[in-house]
Image 1 (spheres, rainbow, N blue to C red):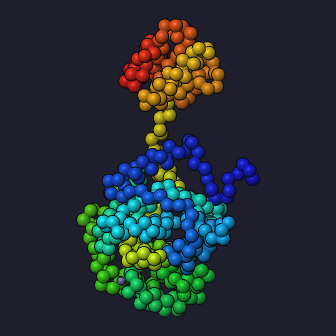
Image 2: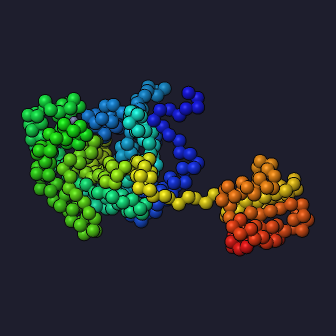
Image 3: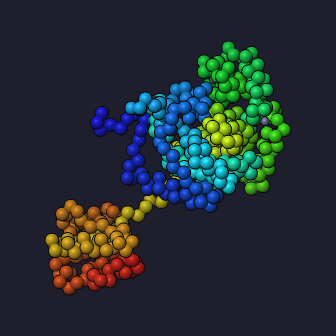
Length: 421
Ligand SMILES: [Zn+2]
Ligand SMILES: [Zn+2]
């Protein structure tokens, strides 16, 4: 047990973290271009926040939350998704009182769900997401979809399809829910056990049930899009027009509903259609009532989240290799104690000058140091022995062509930095 990570968790090893950092850098660049700034919220929140926001009919709240009493008898839950904490912070810190919209992102945030690990699901995974508050019109909907698509494009991911839908608002959804319930009631015998329950509590969820029998039945169910009120219909048209004006391909998919109770109007998923990694890589939607629901002033909001691990899987399945970070620009090889001391000093100076420099910590022979330098992929090595110390010069060897050059210690930094040999 001591040397086993808990079920459903996974280390990001040093050999993998370069990929994460590469993706994170692209995300930060894109967010900066689109005007989103980072927010970091706690890993845990009061349980009530998720009951009120995610909704107590959702699978997350019913089955998947990591909830416990702390020593002060407070019910605490590890974040099961990224949005609720951001909404709580938006209200608590009166961000609504600043010039709107408020546009924020969170990156590689750990998210916890008690899932079945045998299904390949992680109990701790990491999400990138963005949230925009204060803007009610469809322009911001189109913008956040563009953020996600820009990321996938810059990573070189192909075979993606944007699916959009509208699930209406407080005004129009009750009428639709009734029509949907009436329809489902006639076919209840054919629905799976979960859907029989959902039918009463959250009939929309039946629409995206993965069971074949349910999918067969809901094919002919009434569609929310036919029940939208004037405002919701206009909003959805506005989104479509903006996507078209930006040349973004989409398909309207009436079966996209998202799992969480707080969504209103626009919902969307970006779905990978490539072989080997089918499924949703990014999902989000509008949550106009959520800020008010948890005690803030009325303020519209919209956002999306995507799993970093899932994103890495898609990259892998599409054979996309991210550039490997260079670990070492120069390796300082030394022979003898005096040289080791001088080598440490030179290595430190090189590092202070911005060079990725390494030296021996293992008392290796010169030959073994050169071998190790090769393993690190160092394009150059500096070699210092007693003779070099006497003369105040080092030998710099190009590992590609084995050419060597003598360089005075005082000029090493500039020489290495200039990449000369
Ligand atoms: Zn409506
Ligand atoms: Zn079902």
